Amino acid sequence: MLIAPSILSADFGNLAADVKAICEAGCDFVHVDVMDGHFVPNLTIGPVVVTSIAKVATKPLDIHLMVQNNSFFVDLFAPLKPEYISFHIEEEKHPHRLIQKIRSLGIKPAIVLNPHTPAESVEYLLEDLDMVLVMSVNPGFGGQSFIPNVLEKIKRLKRLRDSINPKCLIEIDGGVSDKNIKLLKDVGVDVCVAGSYVFKHDSLKTAIDNLKI
Image (cartoon, rainbow, N blue to C red; front, side):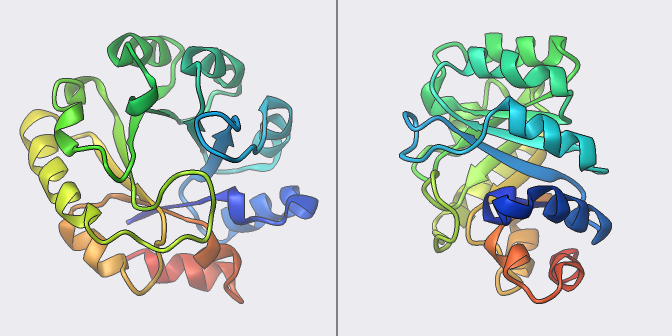
């Protein structure tokens, strides 16, 4: 299991130190939640702050856009050369065009599915994706409880992924902890985003190790 701690749960007064710490503790990616206050009812960070994060991170950035006007935000963050940029299919009229744009910028494209969005919505995009992120909480805030019915959606997504593009990763975000990590692995998750569980643990390394099953 690959682990991408979400800095949404970090101490923003000591953000550089927290980013360094999760990298040293063995995370695989640094997950960056970008919210614009329109697509979701929260506002987080822009490219100036993420530029500072990128300078201290020794692991690749995984940027999750929760915004309107996705193409505009891709242009803002592409110069930072993250490993992934993911966008919500619910907010994009031309997802294939945006996928092509992200890839042309040398970044791996990913699509995000809200809890209510069916796995089949990405069927005809899977061959062009490097990752699908399944939200297991409603996007916008950290610390929410896991929504159990996404497990069946992940099983369906895995079947589609395995038949169309086996190299495409399945990522999950929301309510991940050591209590459900084995279940997530069993249904086919490859990458776990974990915010509260990691940053509120007494030991970042222990928390990350607990999820690497």
